Length: 58
Image (cartoon, rainbow, N blue to C red):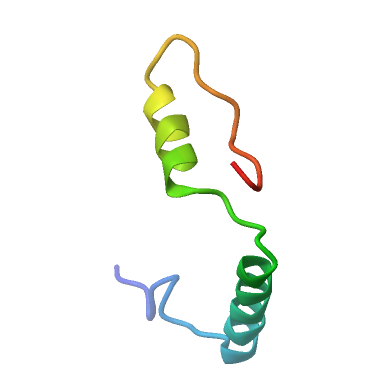
């Protein structure tokens, strides 16, 4: 039996706008993690010694 709607079919425009504003403020303030840092972290997951989660500024 199929549900009337999927989990991600509903939208909360106000919550999305607030999340977008927080993300924009963080990016503008330089609170970001570089693509390279995330790539190294994810690449380490399959190894015997996974790296710790990257931090802001990495």
